[in-house]
Image (cartoon, rainbow, N blue to C red; front, side, top):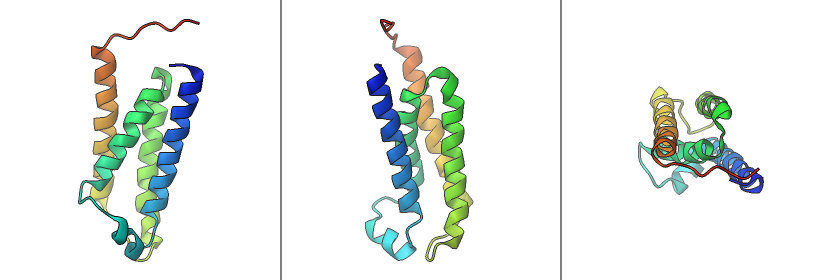
Length: 121
């Protein structure tokens, strides 16, 4: 992956995270109008987010990337207590963790099974 591609993916990862935080902190009546999924919303969102994070993070950055996503999940659940029409539920945090494990696990498994070409430096 070229440095330009890596920067682009990190930027995409940050934007997706900010969109997720923004959506999660919308008042309940607004969020309900744009909600399409069900109880698996958190797992699906965090799986997609963690796949991008897992792809772009180098081996030494992966733990920090995973902990950042987990911290975002905790922040969202705590902050939702102050948002009208939203509830803070531990099951949501469990779904966030499940999504992170699925996404990063899929990336790690793919890295292990598919050999990568060494990049020219």
